[in-house]
Length: 279
Image 1: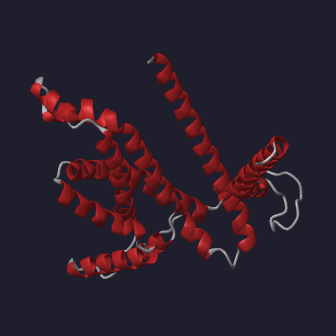
Image 2: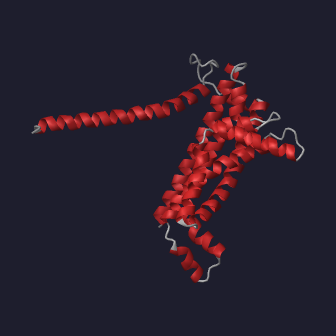
Image 3: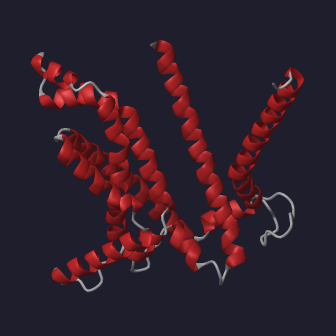
């Protein structure tokens, strides 16, 4: 038998190991974020040394017309594609959930294919589809803002469906029928019974869709043209010629996005806690 003192030592060693592992994971996750924030206020544009604190790169960010166009494209496409894909994905999830088990499993499998598919395959496929359709309607090179937006909607929908379906499975299927029996119209039953029940799944899918869109490079690269670029494409095209001018502004942009994201999460959690307290 193991002595009590030995057992305590092993438990203590296990606790220390767990704490070390947690700290290690947190450092790996958050060190790049802190690095980006520090470099965004680093006066030394090369990033090799710390030249003091400055807000110069935030000013340069808004002075660069090409970069601002890319940021506007990035954010507008992200917001529009998120809104459209959330609505369509939720409707598709409702439709899939209403089917029998066999058809449901088949459609879930088909929905998962674009998710596990390589981005480059999806990008090339969509590019060929857009070019083929363009020739059919007499447009030789249709790639641009609209095609990139459609591509983002296309690859975001499966994530919304995947987020909403589990919440639909958790919901009591008799609630909808009960609402109809009590005199509610189908639309009222969906809006007042189903949507509130699956709201967490909808919000999760919406956040994933927005994150995937704002961060995308490969699919965007293959489905755009005519000088239309998002932030990822702008950074890629400027990575060599003006590397030390582009990177500090990229750090500033990423810092702003991170701060806004953090603010949204904090506000959301505050609202959520207040609602829970009221209940």
